[in-house]
Image 1 (tube, rainbow, N blue to C red):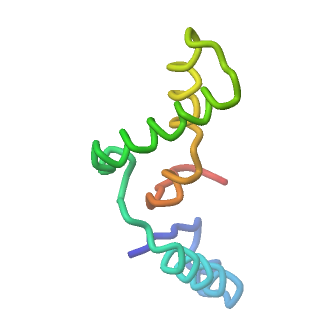
Image 2 (cartoon, one colour):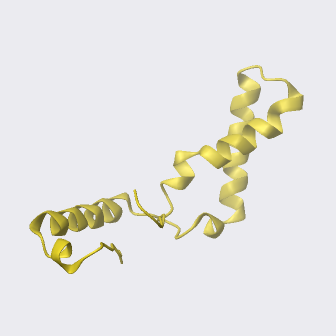
Length: 93
């Protein structure tokens, strides 16, 4: 389910707005999100991703002291996990 709001009914009834909403809905459906929000990602999935990021950082020669910060930064930024969540944005684009 997709909710899109606009300032007036006049805008909501235009063909351009309806096409935008349709395209957004198709885009979301095509991406097939596995989770509704990041908190819904199971702990084992997060742990597997954390281990992969840690191995990647070790392979590139990063010092042991910064591995945890690198892993956390990648988890916060990771498009792999975010693309599996349906995001909700409030306010203007």
